[in-house]
Image 1 (cartoon, rainbow, N blue to C red):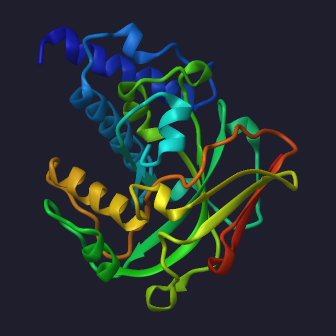
Image 2: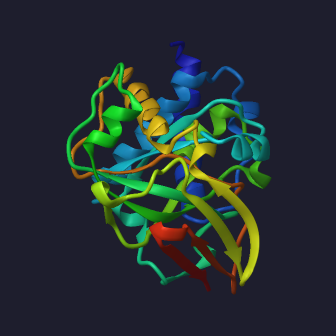
Length: 263
């Protein structure tokens, strides 16, 4: 890595931290520093995660992103990525969140996994994931982009912790009582109007396959998924923008529902 690239990594990380503190959103990092590659982007992500941990936050799990065709089409990014889930972004089901804490939030319906056993790649399969899962829950992920108008490339979203900004989970169902997750359907409502419909098979064919991809991706960094962690495998539908005064609800049939309001 050249001295210039190292400097650009540090500058990108600093600008993202400032944007999290509600300064105006940024121009795309990939345009400002075209020398940054995917490894640099993950290094920027890790640097800012380390700073949040030093400030008192705790990693509670990970997320896979861009694992469904609707999201890749929406954002124009054509391969999955991953980010960290921290305890300071968790909100209660049915709760209220201040929209002003975000730049341009969107909501994504997902099936959240809670692991009973660790997963270490490479070579993790969907069957391995299901065997390691203790429970699943309906969830809404709040994703945000510190990049102006969501004009992102893969480099931008990876550096920005894969857009992770909030997690709302509904009731947990023990894995042995869960329905076939690929067959689970979801209806996403905003202010009572259905805005999107999808199913578990949208997420790499099965949500557990996306968790397996995540475990293998982390293995390349010498890391894995730990028992007790919660894992988001990716959105089952497209992700609408949401703002002040709006309420989002996702209904997952037999798996239950989950909601959140923005004030």
